[in-house]
Structures are given as C-alpha cells and as structure tokens.
Amino acid sequence: DTGVSQDPRHKITKRGQNVTFRCDPISEHNRLYWYRQTLGQGPEFLTYFQNEAQLEKSRLLSDRFSAERPKGSFSTLEIQRTEQGDSAMYLCASSPIQGVRYEQYFGPGTRLTVT
Amino acid sequence: AQKVTQAQTEISVVEKEDVTLDCVYETRDTTYYLFWYKQPPSGELVFLIRRNSFDEQNEISGRYSWNFQKSTSSFNFTITASQVVDSAVYFCALSEVNYGGSQGNLIFGKGTKLSVKP
Image (cartoon, rainbow over all chains, first blue to last red; front, side):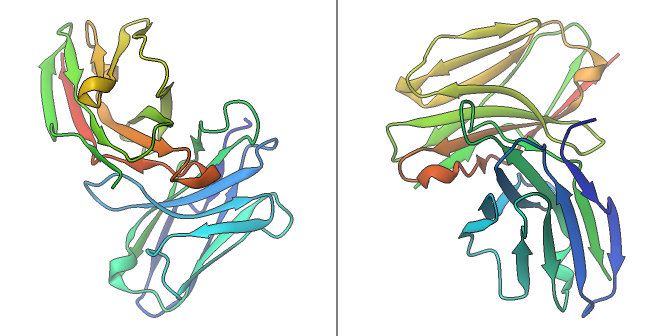
C-alpha cells in the first residue's frame, strides 16, 4: 500500500512524559502536513514541510512541540512534557508539489491520550 | 477571516433517502479551493472532491453530487439513495491560495455526522 502511514496508532502516556510520532508520506509527495483533531472538531493545522524545510508553524504549536523531516521523507512530531490538553488525534497528510498540489491525503492518525 | 461553517452537527436518515450536507465558507481570497472529506469510524480522512474557485460547475460522481455557489459562498454535498456505508463524519474544508500562501493549509469545518439507518 502506498498511502500515508502513521505510527503508533494509539499512545497512552502520563502527564509530563515526552512522546514522538512518526509519519511516512506517499513517496512522491514533497509536502507534508501535521494536523490535530480534538473530539467533535475538524482537524486544525499545526505545521508544514516542503521537502526537509519546515515552512510554517501554527500558533497552536507551542514550544513543547517540535517537528522534523530530516531527509525530506518521513517526519516526526515530538511533544515534550505532555499535558492533558494535548490529548487528541494527530493527523499527517501529504500532497504533491505539482499538479493537484492542493489535494492532501491523510494517514490514519495517532490517537494520544494523556492521563 | 477564513472560516468554514457546517451548521448541521448531526443528520440521521433512513437508507435510500437523499441527504444534503451544507457548507458555507468565508475567505478574503479570490483564488481558493474547496474540499470534502469523509471520516468513517476508523478515523482516516478520505478525500472526496476538490473544487477551485473559478469552476462553479456542479459535479456528480455516482451517488455523490456537489453544488458550488459562489454568490452564497456555499459548497453543498448531496448523497442520493444513501446507504449504511455512507455513515461517517463529513468535513468541508477551504484552502486559500494567495492569503494562505503556497502551502495550501486546509481550514476545516466542524463536520457533520451522518447516520444512515437500515
């Protein structure tokens, strides 16, 4: 399957712990996005990469959040000192840079529960 | 400011009924894209359609059809002869080209939960 994959699918952690999520985009897609979705809401944009460059970060992305895409392929999203308010579904999406570059294809998400 | 409003929080229909999901958007941009995504209980967002702001033609794909009206800033989605498998949360989204930069960030509505009963 050549879709977007995310790992892990579920993560339960205690408040104050650090967590890291991974996203593998569709192989030919240059753009990679992270979104956060809380219960009953639509996804909200967090950050965006074009190849390995992080080009935008939402104000939702506090200093405790950091994202990387070191070789322009997979990306990681790390949350340090997790808080209960970080509990959400973290979605990754990718899109091509040419042609239908505004079509984003989403992965299955990582559901984070902070206890 | 850019915003997407899906006023219907939940809709319940009986199989084979037609159902329309409403979407109203606000944007400062003259060039933008509108999208519909489906999120089944499994959680993965499934892309359904993309429409650019210069193309107001309605589109039909099987049982799905979309009505884009720039005059009312609406992009409504109709499912004809609904089926149980259509049960999901449906999201409308907006991407601005000029004000949103070239990155194409999606601005989502809160979604409409559709339940189709047999």
